[in-house]
Length: 436
Ligand code: ADE
Image 1: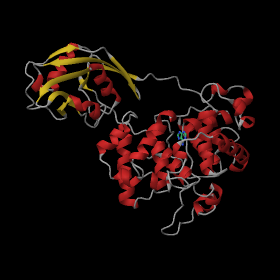
Image 2 (image 1 turned 135 degrees about the horizontal axis):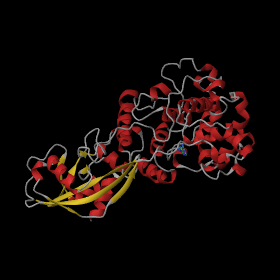
Image 3 (image 1 turned 45 degrees about the vertical axis):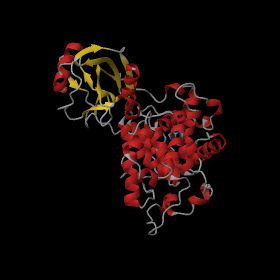
Image 4 (image 1 turned 90 degrees about the vertical axis):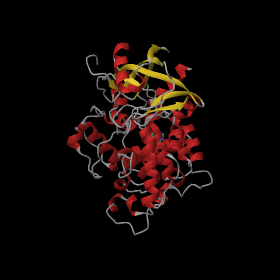
């Protein structure tokens, strides 16, 4: 980084769906692509036995998670099997039939709850999501309640989950579902994919888990299960790997009740087929499993030698002044394309040392160049996605704290007592904690 122009921390945009493996799954086909798999690929018929074993296991052992239960006061819909027979899309051989106007599958599980849980689960552990999900459902019990909420309230409910673009997308999508779909969640994959923040994985999850449609999903859990089951050594994020694993996901979802197959595979990956020390003794698929047969479970899926996450080092600058109603702090809202875009933070500078910081500070906030910059708290280290932050915390001590004229775009003085509420991203919250 040294030698580069001192810069405001620029945040590369990210649209990924977390651990979900997102390459477009092709039109569902029941003929597995043997050439791609490079192995004797299973057909859906040959997968029926393992899918039944999986279903029995899942029904007996699944975790009691709030998004798997109906909303309070709502009854469970009729059993999946009955429901599956009641609309054409559930029958793969009738997928081309148009649905009668105004009709559509009756959801077996509230798609709003499936959607919110799946988005929360993209980057966050199940144990953490459970509480967030419960609180969220109390605050925004349905898609209309969410669509009517203010963005600040939604960000506040999301605070701590990170990746705030997810919260903004969720709000935009709720408004679209209410505005364009009369408050009814779409169920067709292609319609779901039109919604912000919904990629291949989430579209498949909503269509299968809520509407029991035979739509495939693929995430890290399913990749691991498939890789071990069939002894596939494709790198999960390689082009061939994605194609092969999506093909298997399509094969499996056609081999049983879509909702149970998909969630069962996820659950198996989470509870039994763990990345390390899988519990093969209790696995319903062990007799079908190549990796179990050869004792090579931990070799699958293969891992790419890990690229280190990028270190971002620099400084956070904390400037305070006496306002008319108590102390105020200088905060900055990064623009699109900068790191933490749209999320209030102390100004951050990616520079190699204090001298460079002084230059960058003067350039960034010309009205406050007289400030003396003095190291304050100990270095903050913090990891978000692919970045490891190492930030010195510096206080800007100003001879004249009265001026607020001519602050550049994005900068503002905010009452310090409001910062607990206003700072939603984990990094500025950590900096604020270190300053108190
Ligand atoms: N991870 C992603 N989706 C999940 C689900 N529906 N249940 C449990 N873990 C999950």
